[in-house]
Length: 191
Image (cartoon, rainbow, N blue to C red):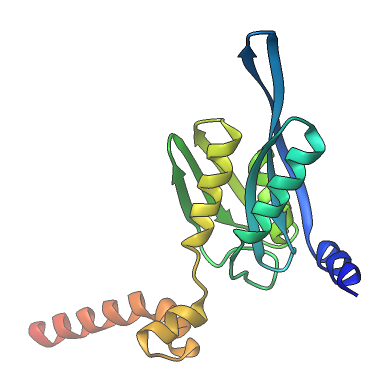
């Protein structure tokens, strides 16, 4: 029974190997080689996480990284289940990423490590750019930091004590109503 539950849990998540690094430890008899793995795991429905693992063999390093990624997952609200609600930036160390919403049919326009995060998250339309560090660890962490700042209109409305319809109508009407009030006050002063 427990084995079947573990298999169902594993099939629920999609994991993507982002980077493998061979590291050497110099000892008296020569060098001992090990491997460090960076893995991104997600359910393609708005949850994503990343993990790092080190071991003497590649499969063991990947397994450790996958386990860590599953424990460090975050939930990201998606608009229509395909893109972000608003443009956002993320920073980690010298890595900086810019993520922009995109219309349907755009696809994922992003570099390697960022693409892995978006695919496992379930985003289908996004335009992203990486500035600064090209280190995959920094790029993945910067992308995750940017996604943590993502907010849905529902959360913003509840935080402000409004309804979603009021928030959305304010966003579209605010500049026009301010201009008309200014124009009305100027007309009153002239007349």
